[in-house]
Image 1: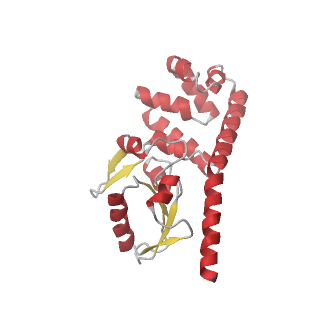
Image 2: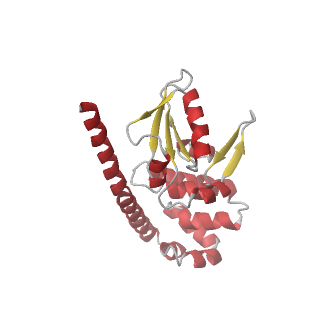
Image 3: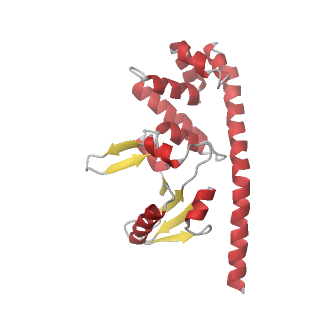
Length: 231
């Protein structure tokens, strides 16, 4: 669901992290624990690896010590801000088989883009590249849902104006949810750019508000752990 998924979708991002979203059920956690043990992965920082923290929205962080994976970080989550529950993510997943026969289940591209709408600076250029890569790959014969995706998520003013001109019918429907599309249809580059900046700012603020209580919980866990070590 993170940088590795971006690589598969054609928006290359170097990452030594592997981000995984999973259904926080005991059988899954048992299987994951076995895999982490094989990687000699240790849980770092807080919170500890437990279903109760995952369903609250926390990420659990591991660092691998196995010689063939030394230094690789694994982040586990079960709930993502602005993204639907795991069962829906799984139903919409993208499954890719490599030339070597390995099968990888990826969070769908639209869901990946939603998950990337964070307060982190690095995520917004990645969203732009993900949508651009998908457009350039499928623009000659797109499915209707791909056009909807471009209109909802494109963050490149010139490209959004181009798409708006190509699909006015679909734009008219989606513009009710994303008013800046009317500016794109009119070819108003500067107005589209300003609206995209406001849209990004709003998402960043929403992400900060979402994480504020969770960060406070982490601080409480850190203090409790520190007190336990000093007693």
